[in-house]
Amino acid sequence: MKKSTRKGFIYFRYIFPIAAALVLLLLMLVPCYRYITADTGINGAISLGELIGNSWDTAREYLFGNSQKNEVTSSFAKTLIAIIVTFIALFIVGLASAIYAAISAFSYFKNGCRESKKRIMFITLTLNRAVLCVYHALMLPIFALPVIMPYLYDNMLNYHVELDASPFDMLYVALAVYAAVVIVIAVSKNFEIVAEMNIYTKRRPEKNTLSVGVESESTEAEPEDAYERMAARARAEQTERIMRLLNKQDAEGEEKEEDK
Image (cartoon, rainbow, N blue to C red; front, side):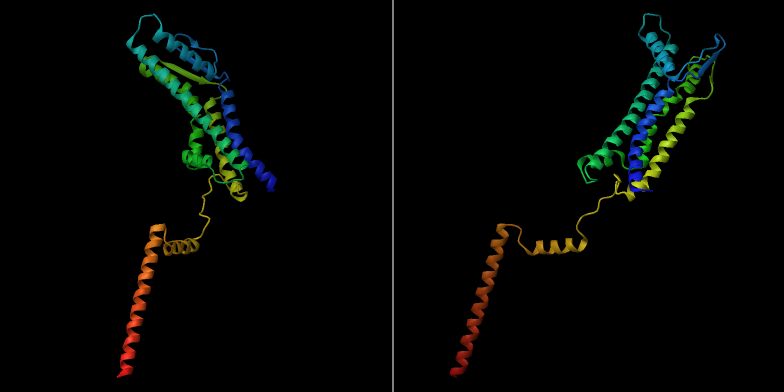
């Protein structure tokens, strides 16, 4: 693969998760879910977005409206609101992880793939590609809401509801889109290493062990501050005086022996 093609694929690798998130948002607009009940029969097809909006409005109006409250129904409404809020928050975090990864990578490439505080922060938060893929996967749970709804009705309200997804459940499409994101990230790894554009590369110290050892020895040999230099100079002068005194004594001893 040519260098320009490899580089283009690397840029595509960071844009693709954002594009995939936009595809997931479009999937929420596809009317493919029909609920079947004993009272209403087969209801009209609705999208995931409509299901979220209708469920939110109904639960909120029941909890905060002026109608008479039932403990079981109130518990159901609170649970439904908690699930919706949690799933939306997870989707936002997953989308934010895709945007953050793209911004961090493009900033890293623009900086000449040099070390920076932004890169250190990105590595600290994401650790590696596997963890980043887990962050991206947080966009998926919201597509499980249509499947969860019948269980909530059965277990909390004791009301049987069946789900029909036609032509197919958008959850499977979302899983396929996510699988494509993971594959692109995995394939891009070798390209990033070869092109030296790997934001997850492990930084090595610029100086080797030998130079570090020599530098540390020379540092130890030289006094670190003025007080140590003064002490060293005093020890050297004292040693010199002792040597002179010994030499003087030796010279006097030799002169006495000659006089004898």
